[in-house]
Length: 147
Image (cartoon, rainbow, N blue to C red; front, side):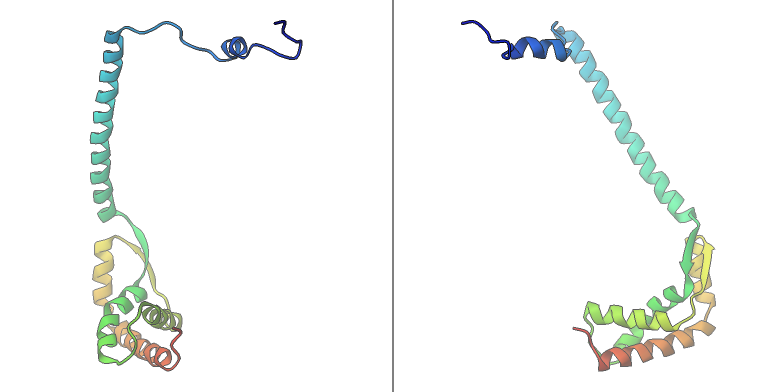
């Protein structure tokens, strides 16, 4: 059967367009290549573990921006919630925290995690203000729950 001008041999076109490796590699060469790949994977796994350890170390020494008022509020939150009778669903808890934080003046610091904990413990004068705003927020949410 004669080929039309429009028809073409797909296989020959594919061979022309796509580069292929026609020779077959001996089994020894394949084993060497696979061995090198396995060694690389082992190296990558061990370096991944080392990176994880470094991240944990860096996390402790990492300098972060933190709102001290929020930390104090979250420390006092459970105690105030136990004393007050209100809904304890997640939505109400989040509403209480949001209302209280909106009414408090934020105090941001840049420090390590250890320094932040020391600073939170040293700011007891802010604690009474935080407790007052938490109680106001609990009363507000108790009157108008959003669930």
